[in-house]
Image 1 (cartoon, one colour):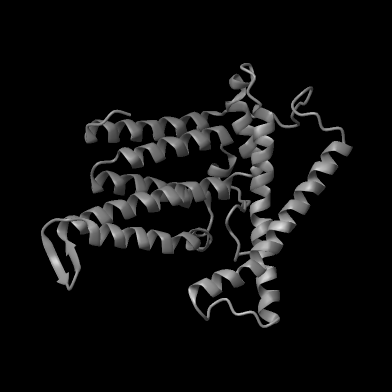
Image 2 (cartoon, one colour):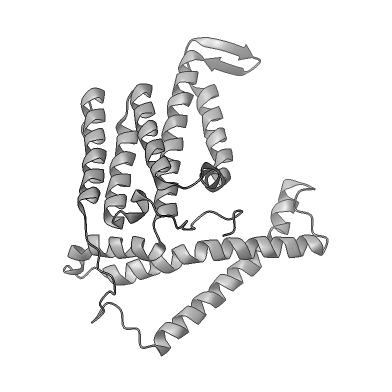
Length: 267
């Protein structure tokens, strides 16, 4: 496993979370995310975060893997917290020239930080414990009723499955091309911003061309094998919900309802 490119990767482990039906994991993640949005108090957000951390420990995936998966988003998270901190008006606690930090700003930044961190952990946990094939199979099964209305469910899920598989491949190719350009003397860190953006084209354009080439190869391979969409297709392993799956969904729903009742909002 490439520990530098965790995004979109599946980490195989023998845990309760890995053995859950992908449909229950998707529903549970959606309910917990909804609970995060509906939480009105920091205490509620902490309860949700504690439950998510318990699920993480149950998954038997090391915290280092979770940190590496979240690392690309830490800068965006820090920027969002900083903007929330300095742009929220209220009783000034610290004032330095035009920068004013208020008590309300600290509270808003803390609340936003807990929400964003929990949402990122939930999305990351779903990706690390569910294979792309299982994830897309669950989506196809859940969206099957739309197929009776003429909606191309199988084709949409197939595109999503291929896209998920492309993420680690494209990231790895981008890293390889970047190192090759650095070996040729390219410098992406020095100079003016506009110049650095132009030099990034030496990485972006080859990756873009490579993605088109891979897409053409996949299309040719599918056509040569007689792929005709969902017509007449069956699955080797059918999805089946177990008692533990319903327990996970009920716990997630219960937490969502609890947050709703204490926060005074509708779910």
